[in-house]
Image (cartoon, rainbow, N blue to C red; front, side, top):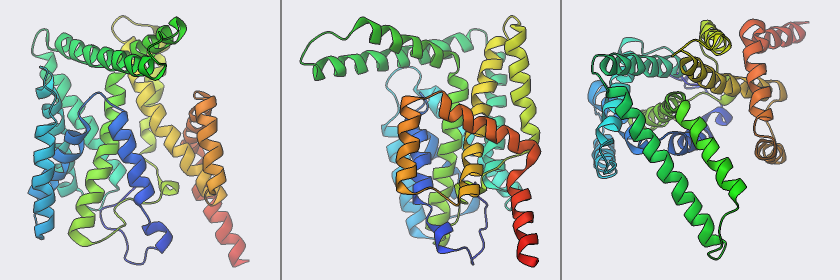
Length: 320
C-alpha cells in the first residue's frame, strides 16, 4: 500500500492520497479499544527521532502529537497498556524503516505489528495474571462504550427505553469483539502506522506518495498460512487455541478483504461516486457478505496473482 521512496514521476491521480489516509484514520479511530492518538502519535515521534528532523514543522507536529497523546491517555488503570503497546509498535516500525528503507510500507507495518505482538506476548507470559488484567481492562472499556451508546440512543428516543432485542444484539457483538480484540488492535495499529508514515513523509519531503494507491495493495503471499493455521485451530477446537485461531482468521481476513478490494479496483479502473455509494450501502445492509466476498477474492489473488496476469496480458496486447 506504500513504499518509502515513491518515484517522482508518480501520476497526479496516484498522488491524491488523502482518501486513503482518511480511510486509515477512520479504521485507527474506531477499530480498536486502544487510544488512537497514541497509535498514531508515538510511531510518528519514533520516526522523527530515529530518521531525524530536518524541518521545524516536523518537530512542531511531533511536540503537538506528544501533547495530545499524553493528554488523551485513559484515566483508568489501562492507560499504561496503551502506552506500552504504542511504544513497542512505534519502535518496531522505526527500526524496520531504518533496516529496510526501500521495502513496501505494508511489509514494514505488518512486521511492526508482528514484532510488537510477539514482545507483548512474551512480557505477558512471564508475569502471572497479566493477561487476565488486560482482559479485564478491555472488557470494562467495551462494556462502558456499549452502555454509553445505549444511553445516547435512549436520549434520542426521548427517554423511551431501548428495545430488548437491540440491547441483546449489541452485547452479543461486544462479547464477540472482546474475543477478537487482539486482531482488531492489530488492524487498527496497521492503519495508524499508515497515517503516521504518511504525515512524516509529507512533512519531511513534501511528497504525497508515501502510500501507494489502494489498487496496488498486497503483502507477502506466505501469510496465507497464518489464515490457514487459524482456520485449522477453529476446526480442531483445541483447548486454549480456539481464540488464537479466531484472532488469526479475523486479522488475516481483514487484510485479505482489503487485498480483494484492491484487485477489484485494479480490474475496474476505479469506482465512480455512485459505485462507492452502492458499496457502502451494500456493506451496511449485508455486512458479512461484502467483506466476505472481498476476502475470497484477496485469498484467490495469493495463488492467481490476478493483477500481474492482467498486466502481462495488456502488455502483450499493446505490443501486438
